[in-house]
Image (cartoon, rainbow, N blue to C red):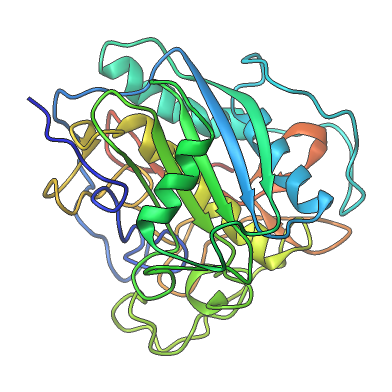
Length: 326
């Protein structure tokens, strides 16, 4: 019988950006990141995702996030936004796409004997006035998620603005996911770190903070940086963590899904290859990724309306290598 887990109990400190060991390095090759299935529930079928923007988010920032979510399962439906962005080079989306990246999550869910998850952007809401203040505890974040009324099998996403501080943000996590009880809707929190700790939570779009706790052994800080593909270091950094959290929320929503290590500190499908975005990645270097010909920004997938994103490498469910899209 599964034990109920709170928001803070699952993946408190999954930091995907700029941390951990590389999966491809000429100097060091770590053991394969084996993902074990613990026979618990995963999210499958239609997965409605509702988003709460807590604090000030511009229309551009909201569009970047909505386009990403709508790109995960293009045939999954959801609310529509008819627009084209003006940053970077527009045009048809070349492979690899956001949906191709999400196919790895599909494979995990199929491996558990369930139907592949189809993300549906069900709703978006605003709390620009910050009704609970600009300093939030994890419990308050969970309460904000509950406001969205997400049904079992769905995900409530709380995104906090750059001037909103969340308990543990920067010191222990840039994002987290969890569930109030087994079978309930999952919830995800991601913070915009542009004004607080970009060196910890917005790498590789901002130089890594010297001596940051989550840096890999041997890193002295700095490291190679990339241009933000949507022109916003904070939101482009949020998208990296949002991608990782959604992958974890679907494959390990209640703490008995796919992960390696101990249940109290699970290493999930996007955490076993941290800081890896392109081939040749190693601590401080995100790897060889694509470059926008107009802006020079780095990206590895393209989504709805030709919008470009950087997403973390996921662990292959069959051979446990890090899947790097190119």
